Length: 264
Image 1 (cartoon, rainbow, N blue to C red):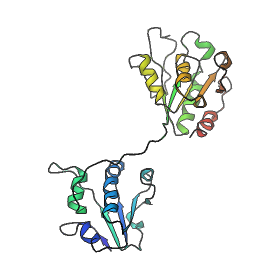
Image 2 (image 1 turned 30 degrees about the horizontal axis):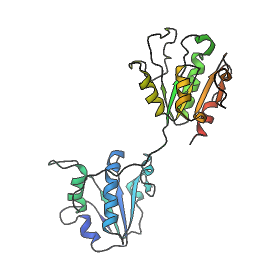
Image 3 (image 1 turned 120 degrees about the vertical axis):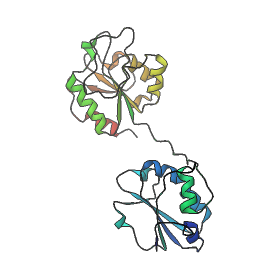
Image 4 (image 1 turned 135 degrees about the horizontal axis):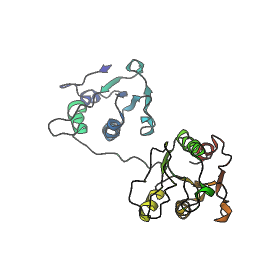
């Protein structure tokens, strides 16, 4: 039985009180609505512990990351049969000073109003700090533009978010201009050590040439999450730790992607 839309006395509670055994909630909405609805879905399961609830989400939005048990559909025509009750939740737009969650509780679910957010578990950071430029001896360390672009694209293809952590401080070398493909950078930000440290602390990996950024990363991140871009100056000049190193004079497309794929 499909109840859609839920109006008047036809609120979900009216049907749940008849104690169906299997109920499918079809939640055909974007990420923000799913984030809000998670608390309401848990509340329904709490209020009706004897009912087996399933939820169907739209495939392709990766929303199952937040509700791993969800069934995925690409159209409403794919709604499974075999349920005692199937309900399409509209999650109406907020009115009358109520949040969307509260309005859904009142207009669709028929339960006490609530508007809390269920916390999302922590996920590993996919932010990757990148530093292509040495201030004092750029010719000995900096990659050429094409090699740097290969590295940047490898990071993207690995599903990570590259951010160039190059602050243009008092002793900035004008030779170290931003590569044209770099679309995420801190160059316009006020150069402060605390800002750099805080940024790297929230990154899941660091990839760069020898620089203040590299040494900062060595003091902040686990060493297996640091990759050294080696040109004329070997990494052994700076550390005895077994740091991952890439020869940027002979860099092969995909090398850094393979390394990032090994990081959880």
